[in-house]
Length: 137
Image 1 (cartoon, rainbow, N blue to C red):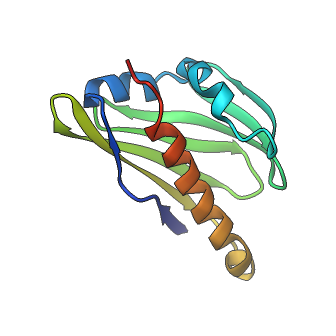
Image 2: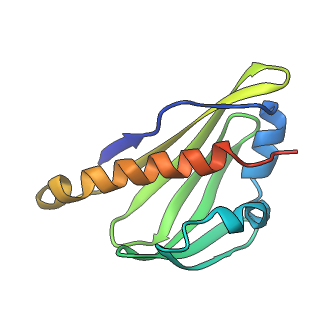
């Protein structure tokens, strides 16, 4: 398994507000217009899962497998060219501010690591950027 981590993102909302929003995927409706339309062909979700079709990766489906209140939401791939887990960690900075990091652990075959490591790291960073810009209130 190979691990990819985003940089830590500062968020001007409480850890409770951030967690409440990321732990229910119905809240993705608020960021639908921020998705990169040049790479994203489809995007659907319910409270526990999200499905996207991304060029050139193809279909991806993630399901929430664990929620740790005000700390972490863990996802597992259900449909993906490479099996992976993704987790979003959130920590308080103050009562009105928090910080977030996105981590992906992927089962990347050794022969493909050189080709996919850069795009996966970029993808993790983009996910963290989008999440950090959500109006969480």
